Image (cartoon, rainbow, N blue to C red; front, top):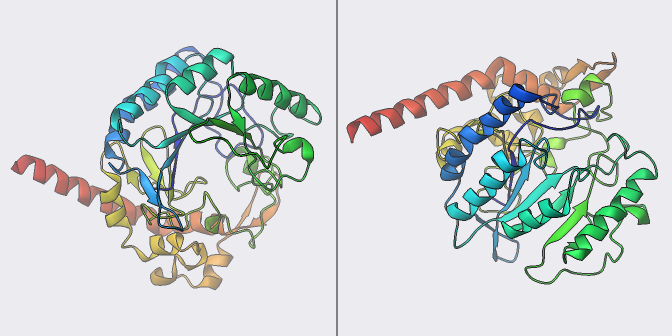
Length: 357
């Protein structure tokens, strides 16, 4: 895969109004232990069922290491950092000792301490993404985000971590101080991004608290499926554009927005086996083409029907039309059952093979 986005836990110290999943929130005492345990119980199996070859081929034909993005929630808070995050980093190095993936970590940055940064770098993390540079994160509104960025820059500079820009930033304050500079080979990097028009998805996904709070601005012309972190090309393992999202329990999705049901679980099966099975479905092929409107054509949904089913009312009473909503309806009425049946058949075949020998 070119990229794998792995949410290790739902635990977070924030409950942001724009978050795409309302499971990201603070958990206290026993609830925190329980939610972290979900990731603890799954990560060994997830790693075992990811490809042995964690590379992809770029446009020039050169093999590049997969970018494995570890995220939460917030991985650096107490109760997550030592209990789950660092053990996963250590397990990744054991899984691919000779040709490891590139490791990126997403964090809000406000809980980042020098010793946490040192621990990540010592465990092979090559990129730290500070994902809170917007007005939605508490404490980041207006000029405060820029003062925060300077604090992070000072910490990174002390450790030889070079800043890179995500691209598209319009304000000079959001850009790397030297956007033309290039990090040396092997040099760790960091970057800033957030939910702004020019720093991520300004429209916001029609998901989670962003949907409940009436914050999404995405219309039908906004095809998240065809964008990076959407489903387009996710089936093309080892090729450019291939990316999947993983939840703490090992469930996998063709996009970071997440469909209404997972394709399968890496806690149970190898990724290649899941792809071989679900990739034969015409609806999944449509998602892989970045054409959600076409996912129901083989099942009796014309493009006109799909569009008519892509309308819903958000938490503020606004009527929104977006293809992600049509995808949700098709999953609910058709595809979820198909995926479940395929999963049960695969697991039955696996069980029979184990019993036979």
